[in-house]
Length: 88
Image (tube, rainbow, N blue to C red; front, top):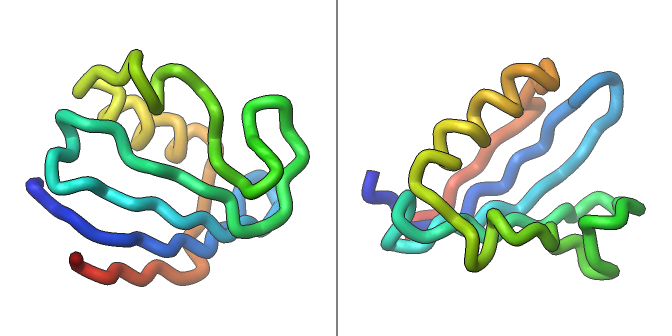
């Protein structure tokens, strides 16, 4: 922290492979990351271009959620295949 940039995650979660784009604004963790599935995803909380549409990643963001996102990843047993970071 503070980190501003674009993180590309290629990971395997629960046996499925996903590629995500995570934009970390310069105000992170005070402002939420923008997360988009680059792998086609069909889920009620993911729109047609892959953006995650939940209030905690928008107007209901709290700095403590940054820690929670890490814990969720740990519980899903996600293994990164590759990670790249482009600083902005």
